[in-house]
Structure formats: structure tokens, C-alpha cells
Image 1 (cartoon, rainbow, N blue to C red):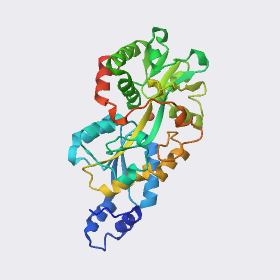
Image 2: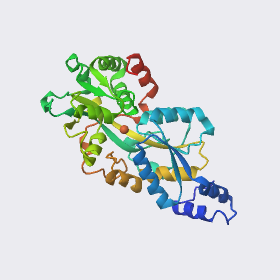
Image 3: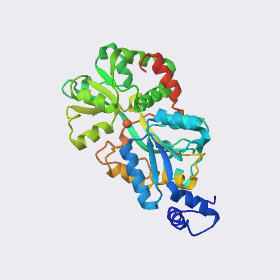
Image 4: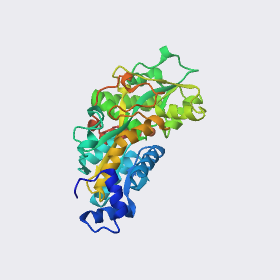
Length: 341
Ligand SMILES: [Fe+2]
């Protein structure tokens, strides 16, 4: 298929598909027949905003199939070339790496990669960062003062923290944090930390639930991502009014900034539309949804701005990490061995 289609041309081709019999007609017809299928592991509301914005601008329909990072990543691998997925969007990069390692992504177009600074995408060019989220320690302001906060994520392994903190270990968000810890500090330190976590922490299902427990005084703090707090504050604050966010900074593993990914499947039957969708998300339209919408995730596009309520990404002193180095399988194996999964 020639690569000459712009978004507008795609739209026009789709609209004219029934009357023009050119080599592009088959492609245009399939677009008109159902658009693209996106396996979406990002928060559904954010993905919906992206899909609606894209469809409005291009006329290309987007069908979202929602699920978790690991579930959908494994599903794509299992389905192989027969997968109906055209695009894969995740909350965190480990699931992107899973699919990348299985050789199932098509290279992204150069003009898409050019929209995102190198630090937010893998060198392979097989997928790109589309949003980012910061690890935080969400703590109960009635129980902890600033000087009592952990200086490092590693401090939470100390027996002094026994029974005082929480997380959602079954979630891909937390597992990405463990992936960062593993990449930064190695297997021995990570395993020791996970075993201590099993002793010290309470497991909740979901970051919102963990934050809610902090707010309700059930635990002193929780390791989650920043946007759960901002989202709740923007609504009623009922699950976060007693909670403040502590940013670990200093390139600590706890200052890990997780990259959400987007990629096009090599087996996509609508590659041009799929490429156009990922380009749209990485570009102005998609990044403005991050700035103006209710996701409170960071924008990562070149010159893109995040919501002004957030602590600027540049001030987070996140550790430098290649997003393609986070190993989902090793993390879940280690967490299972530590009794956390
Ligand atoms: Fe999340």
C-alpha cells in the first residue's frame, strides 16, 4: 500500500470507496467497514477521549477492547498473526516490551517518532511513549509529617515500616515500579525488597482502593501513581482529602516515571489507519487531551504541555531508564516467589 495518504486523504478515500475502483479502494473499503481495533490497557476514559478526537478529525472509526496491560499483551501474543488488534495501547511499558520481544510490532513511521523526545520511547522505534505517570508515596497527613516520610522507596523495606504502608501489587502500575527497581538495583536488592514488602505492606486491589485506605486511616501511606490523587481532587476529594503526595525525587527508584506506550501490530489489516492513530495520540491532538482532560497523566510529546496542576515532569528527578529494559515476566516471577502474587 502506498504511504502517500495524509489523514484527510484517508478520510476522503474512505468516503469515496464505493465509487472509485483504484488499488486503494480495498483499503479504503476496509476502513469504512469498521475502522481500527485498539487493544486498550490505558484507562478507558482517556482512551475514549483519544479515540473520539481522532475519529472526529479523520472519520476513521476506532473500536476499543479494554483490559489490563499484561492480559492484553499476552492475548496479542497468543492470537499471533490472527489477532484482530491493529493498535496496542498500554498504561506502562513492560507490556509493550512483551509484545516487542515477540516480534509483533511494525516499525512506527518516522514522522510519529519525531513527535516524541528520545527519552520517552525505545531506540527500536517499534512503539512510542504516549503519556507518563509518576510514582508517589500518597500519605495520611494526619499521621505523617514531612520529616517522617521515607527518603527512598527502599526505606519501606525497613522493619520500622511494618504494617504501615500499602500498594496494589497485582496491578500493572505497581509491577512497572518493581520493573524499574529491578533495572536500577538488580535482582538481589529487588528480591530482598519484595520479601520485606510482603512483611510490611497491605495489598489492595487497585491504586484507587489503596489511596482510599490511606484517606480512611487504614494505612499510613501507599505507593501509587500521582494521577489517582489529582483525579479524585478534581471530582469530590472524598477519597483523598486527608492525603498528600510525596515525590521521592533524587533519581530514586521511587521517583520512577512510567511510560504508557502505543504501537501498531505488524499483523494489522489497516496499517495506515493504525499508524495515523498512534501519530495522532503522540501529536498535538492526543497530547492536548492529556493537558486539558481529566486523566492528569503527563504529556510526553515534543513541546507538549501537561496539566498545569501537576508538578512539572522536569522537577521529578526521575531515574534514567530505557523503557525497553523493563522485564514484565521476571517481575511477576519474583513477586510470585516473594508471595505477593
Ligand atoms: Fe493506572
